[in-house]
Each structure stands twice: as C-alpha cells, then as structure tokens.
Amino acid sequence: MGKGYSARIASNPYIVGTFACIGGGLFGLDISSMSAVLNNPAYASTFNNPTANAQGAIVASMPAGSLIGALSVTYLGDKLGRKKTIILAGIFWVIGSILQCASVNRGMLVVGRIIAGLSVGISSTVVPVYQSEITAPSIRGRLVSFQQWSITWGILLQYFVEFGCSYINGNASFRIPWGLQMIPAILLSLGMLAFPESPRWLVDNNREAEALEILADLHGGGNQQDELVVLEFEEIKAQVYFERTEGAKAWSDLLKRGVMRRVFLGTSLQMWSQLTGVNVMMYYVVYVFEGAGLTGRRANLIADSVQYVLNVAFTVPAIIYIDKWGRRPMFIYGCLVMGFWLYLVGGLQARFGEWGTVDGTATWVVVNNPAATKAIIVCSYFFVCTFAISMGPASWAYPAEIFPMRVRSKAVSLSTATNWLFNFALAWAVPPMLSNIQWKTYFVFGTFNFAACIHFIFCFPETAQRSLEEIEDVFSQGHEFSAWAVSRSVGKKDLADVLANKAGKESLEKEHA
Image 1 (cartoon, rainbow, N blue to C red):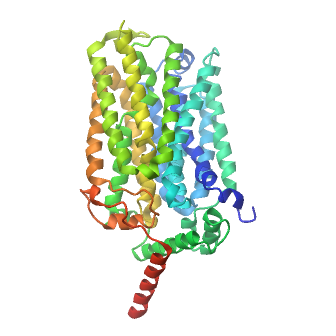
Image 2 (cartoon, one colour; image 1 turned 30 degrees about the vertical axis):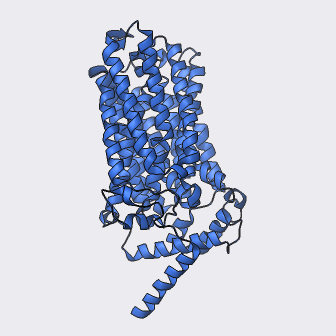
Image 3 (tube, rainbow, N blue to C red; image 1 turned 90 degrees about the vertical axis):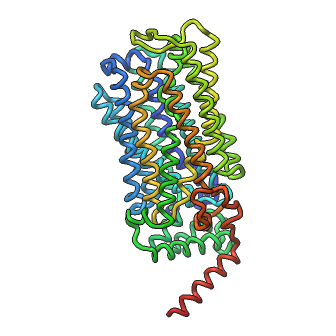
C-alpha cells in the first residue's frame, strides 16, 4: 500500500472495475426502503398518514438531493479526484441513514433523505466516470453495467430486509432496515482506500508518473512497457494535451462545437431512462399491484419481491453481452418492447378496472377478475425484465464514455443531474397521476418509450469496444441525424497508429516553431 493503493487489487479488472458500484447499490437501497413501507401501518401512523401528494414529496426528496449531488461532481470530481469523491459519497449516505432511522416526523425524514440523496447523486455520477477511466475498452461497457446490477441488488436485498422486518410490530419494522442500509456505505468508503485513482485524472493534473504506474498495474501486470499500457498512456496524454489547447475546463466548454451534441445525447438519454416509467414500477409497485386487484399486504410484498428478483436476474445477460450487442440495439429494441408492455397494462386496467376502495382511499382497481389481475402483474414483470436487459445497464455506460476528458466531469454530472431531475418530478407526480388519470398513466409512459425509440434510431451512434480516445473519431464523423451510418470500425487504432499520429503532430509543431 506504499503506492496509496493495492497493486494486487488493481491487477484484477473485475474487482477494480466493480467495487465502486456499491455506490449504485445505495440508490437501490433507497428505492426499496420506500416502496416496502407504503402499506406499512406503523410507517403511516408515525408520519401522520401521508396523502398521495405528501407521500410523493417524501419519495421525491431523495432525488432532489441527488440532483444537487450530481451537479456538485462538476467541482468535486475535478478538484478532489474520482477516488476521494466516491469516499465522500459514502460518508454522506451514513449521515442521511442515521437521520432517517431516527426520524420522528416528516421534516426530519425528508432532511435525512435529502442528505442521502446527495450521496446517491455524487456516486451515480462519479462511479461510471471512474469505471470508464480505469477499465480496458473491451470490457468497459460490461463493468460500467455493473452499476445497474448493483442498483438491482440494492433494491432486492433491502426489500427482503424490509419484508423480514414487516413481521415486527411497531416502528422497528421500518427503522431497523433504514439503519442497516448504512453498512454498505461504510464498506464503500473504507474499501476505496485500497483502490487506485483514475490515471486519466492524474495525467490531467500533471501526475504522469503515477498515471503510468497505475496503468501498468491495471492492464500490464506491473509492466510499464506492455503494449496495451503504452498505447493507452500515449492516447491519454495526446488527448489531454490536445484538449488543453482547446480552452479551459469551464461550463462554456459544454456549448462548444462537437461537445454540445454529446451533452444533448447524454442528458436526453438520462431523461428517457426515467420517462420509460421504470421507477413507477419500482417506487410504487405496491400501488400498481393494488390497482391490479392484488389484495393483502403479505401477498403484495411477495409479488413485489418476484419483480425485484427478475430485475436482478435479467440484468446479467446485459452485463455479459453489452459490448458484443452494442449500445444502440439495447436502446432501440428495449424502448420498443417496454412501450408494448405498458400499453398492455394500461389496456387491461382500462378494460377490466373500475372505481373501488383500497384502505379507505378511492382507487381505480380490478375487482373479482383473477385472470386480469395476473395478466397485469405478468406484463409488469415483463416490462421490468425488458428494462433490466436493455436500457438499465446501457443508460449508465453511454454517458460515461462519450465526453472529452476536459469536460467529462461536468458533462456526466449534467447528464446524471437530468436523470435525478426527472426522477424527482416523476417520484412526486406519479401517486397523483395514479389517483387522477389511473390507467392512462401507463399510456403516457408507453408513448414516451416509443418517442425515445425514434430518437435513438436517428441520433445515437454506436460506441462499443472503443477506447475513450477513439470515441472522439466516432463523433468527428458527423451524422447527427443518421447515426446508423457510423460504422463500428470507425476509430479503431493499434499502437503503431497512435505513435505515427503522435510523430506527425510533433513534426507539424516543429515546422510551425
């Protein structure tokens, strides 16, 4: 550890590329920490039986904090480095969890959720950047996809903790799970002390010797003359030095030619990932299944848990094959199929539902029709499976890899902040939507999926299996509205190409000297 990290850990690409994903798991913990208490009488009593609007506000307080946290990475990620920023995120989560666990009223609960949200916003922004900057191009998409898998595991594990604690009477049924969720954050902050800093960040901060040493440990077994190590080091230096001549790392850089297009792609992708409606099926799955006619708290909890297990299981094929399939097909076909399932859910609700009462509240619900109830639940399961195998992992990988180094922290922060902005809006809006426009809610989100599909077809070029520096060539091709025209061979280089390009640049500099 004289290097400030463990070389043994750095030499294993899957350990060094996935451990930080615990930060993604924190978001998953939060989803379940709320969804599993929505029909908990002790929770309702403690927080004065929140209405649909009040419950929406409580849930939305976390993404509100995440929005601030994501934007803060524009400063923290460049100033402190990727590693220290991830450690800071874990500390914020512990503070937020303590406040939530001890909360005695809505105000204290909301403050705790906002602070925990800061952690989630920071980690969800900086972790994909960190992963993309330390992993080899051939497995970068796979390792960044672990961020989504970590979210699904967080949802699942916290849900089963909540389910087990549901057998406890009183406030301990929700306070114990809220307290236990600080454990992963403690492991994250302490564990990251043994991990290396991003070599790209080090080069950008004039620490080239450290960067080369880390690259050698990451990809060359400690051999600084390894061809892949030399290739990556030369590419990183060339790209960083080139970008320095393009101007300072200011917000105005995001508006420069060639960058603004990518900012729009990154932010719109994160917007679409929320507008797919996946968090309707995650945060408010209890309400969805109650509307389908599933009665009984225990039966609902079991049905919810099946959905979360499927979410974990169907993320695995995406992790394995994302670099083979590519990003574009996962976006396009994923949204197309998700829209289909949501339209089926809405159609079944419209055809077989009617106004009824659930826990004393007027609700659009399917009554005495077991076949329709099962069909709605199955379609919901298929929707979640489709998201897990397509948009879920790919939506984290793409924004982390498309931006130049000089703006990467700011641009990824802005993209992730867009995710949290829409997460905040939807978390607050969905309970009133389910109360007022009922089954039409599913048609709204289904339509968003079809619109996203069109956008992906025309505007999103493929980035799989290219180094972060080679992706620059992808966007230099143009094709802003005909992304399918960019060949998957564009940008591919070997060491000879990089060294020849470097020699050519040095020759030109001497001629102009």
